[in-house]
Length: 367
Image 1: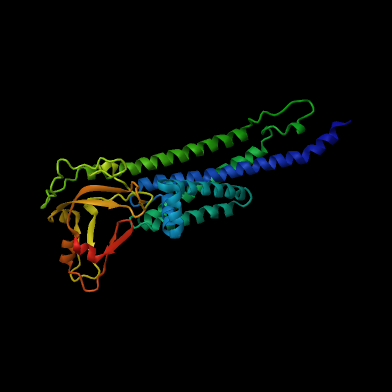
Image 2: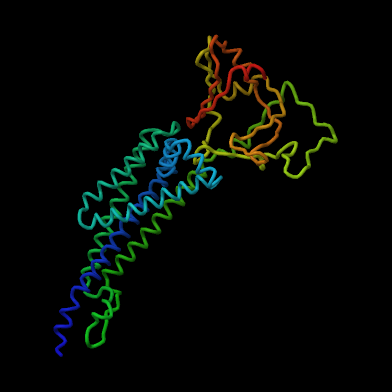
């Protein structure tokens, strides 16, 4: 039998094989484009004052937007792992969408580039919800991420196209091998260039993330906080009796060390507050609203008190409870200074990152 009909019969299989290989390369190009974009966003967020990680910005937006019942269900199922799982979920979804955008970009690059711009715009809007961020820094972060992602996608798709046209590209299926038994090696220059660029994109994304995290860590205010010394309290709490002890299995100690005190974060990252730029504002239904700087607050008379704190999510017998000796300015003295108006029934506190919590005014006045 002549070998020519057999080779013609195998041609559709070769085309299907090449088509699948092209899609995989395009998907990888899109995935790596997203990786580089997010890496650059982390780098800019670490280097630019007031900038915010786009991933964390989206995560905080999700936390603030989901229904309460869903949030409680996630906490009950995942515990303290809920936030890492959320970040991992955002990264996985971003990678999958990036792969789809890469396949789209192989045919309609402008549409794929538009997808990167839309994703960056969404990240910018999420970052703008952070009161500590600035619009300009969020915009610069988003533009840098979009440009890096689009540039990476363009470069890798171009290399993927060249690899597909490489006459020495990876070997065909065994059934389509030449009748003389020879096969191509799959190490042609086009394919090697694509693999080198893909590896470079992985390294670039990883280096950008690591550098960005290092820049953020460098700006931590741990050293500033460690240098703070509280003034001697005007009223010190009496020492516990010598025999006082709660050394009972399952019972919280009389005093829980700071490093062991329970901690529940409502945000993905702990706000970094510089005392020199912090201030306390007393406003609302008061006759004399005022603002205190940190130094002015420290100059006010302070007291000590032994207080037990418990998380609202702490179950019976849970460990989200702790006793400690606290020092600070009594809130009641600040409320009296402001002059509470009749009808003021709630004290609402707002943190620098926008988190709010309140309690009845009568509770504050009774302390």
